[in-house]
Amino acid sequence: KRAPEWWRTAVVYEVYPRSFASSGDRSEGTIDGLRRRLRHIADLGVDALWIAPWYPSPRADGGYDVTDYCGIDPRFGTLADADALLTEAHASGLRVIIDLVANHTSEQHPWFTAALADPNAPERGHYVFRDGRGPDGALPPNNWISAFGGVAWTRTTDPDGTPGQWYLHTFAPEQPDVDWTNDAVRTEFDRILRFWLDRGVDGLRVDAAPAMAKAPGLPDADYSGYPGFASTQWTDNPHWDVPAVHEITRRWRTITDAYPGDRVLVGEAFVSSPERLSRYVAPGHLHTTFNFDFLRTAWDAAALRSTIDATLAAHSAVGAPPTWVLSSHDAARHVTRLGRQDTGPEVPVGAVPTDLALGTRRARAALLLMLALPGSAYLYQGEELGLPEVEDLADADLQDPVWTRSGGTSRGRDGCRVPLPWEGDRPPFGFSEGRPWLPQPAGWAALTAQQQAADPTSMLCLYREALALRRRLPDLGGTRLDWLAAADGVLDFVRDGVRCIVNLSRNPVELDHGSRVLLASAPLDHAVPPDGAAWVSAR
Ligand code: TEU
Image 1 (cartoon, rainbow, N blue to C red):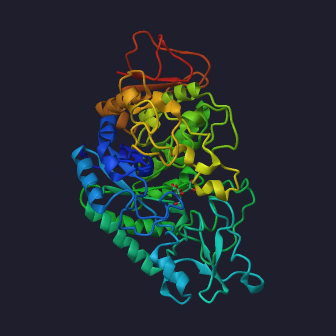
Image 2 (spheres, rainbow, N blue to C red):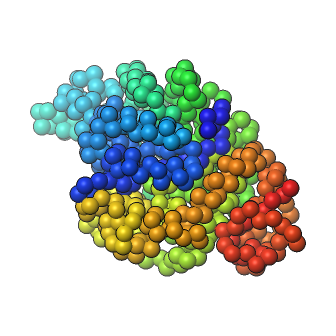
């Protein structure tokens, strides 16, 4: 499918390459493994894949700490493997979006090494180095906190062994923020963008977009009104969602638009309102952005409807398509979230009782809701298998910096990054022949792709059917959405020829006599059961 502006209705599948598929006795995923399992993604019926960072990296933050933006981490493979993947994906009708981590580099990036080695090196200006406050500069330059918890500044030691300046890191100390007011930084990222566009990628996902610009003078933030460090709660501050960020995206849009073939820039922008989000996709800026509001909305009809309406209004005001996301490599898997009373995306400490059967029923219904909404949708690897969050990883296995930097108040994001189960009846389930970098639960034998492909009632088959129908029925890709009057706790809307009913109440929703059901998330007995959804022909 090469329709113009494909990204307006695209379904994009997120690949977290470290955990997708591998080969030999390796513990981590490889590009070769991804190529061998590409069929799985093509058969699912999505339009594109987005690959989380595959660059050389010490992996202080799972690859979001890059040392070479124009290379491939040797643990994943080579540039030739990446080229082969692009060719094969395109041949299978899949577009490829890669990750652009431009708010920060790795502390081992040659720029940062040079900046540390000599306080007078020009590379200091590529980052945000400042003198400390207080006697001997022993206090951080301002009060900013890191998204991963703790102070957002780390003091350096000068080559002569004396305490030196501080540098800013919005995320982990191993991820120093670059200074986007620096011309060398801007020029280098122009080059990186062109390097990958020349190689044939169809788009870039702009990581942590709101972090890139900082208010001039780096004034203290006012955190009153923000609950604890709770990371990304700080969204209107001198270090987040500052207007100058839009100059960066405009610059990149000009570069991207010069290429043929409908290349796309997708923003990862966690901001305080749909209106703030829409600024990232105003004409001349990014094409689309992730919609975190949808991810964070509880399983509640009124709340979902108001998120949907606010999102549609803000996006139609700027002519951009909305996006919908249920899971990512940063959030607890939604089968688990939806099986809890508390449906928030953060992983709470300790054992929260989870009803996975309930969560699975709701996840099936949520899929039909998401795929019936106007715009583009993002899937995260493993959700098509109905994988739950792995909540019982041992402390010793946890690798996410969120776990260490939160002082253990968060278990971090490893539980949604466990390597996928492909086939067989015991770990490593065909992921590789080795020991996966995070242990897979033995119970995943029932959730392997192979097992589910043979079961028409499986989550995998529901994803395939829903995506195939979405392709066949252009109404599902259109922009109109008309709400129908519905009982409390029920979402009921029409997309031209298709009606979508999602039952979040405790009572069944009777279907009109003679209704033609196109697809249902659960067996229907002339009614959509609680926690179920159906697509019904409206023609
Ligand atoms: O995430 C950016 C971001 O805003 C995160 O703070 C996110 O909202 C948080 O993890 C939710 O708990 C991106 C990547 O997706 C994430 O994996 C990286 O750790 C981060 O950037 C730094 O590069």
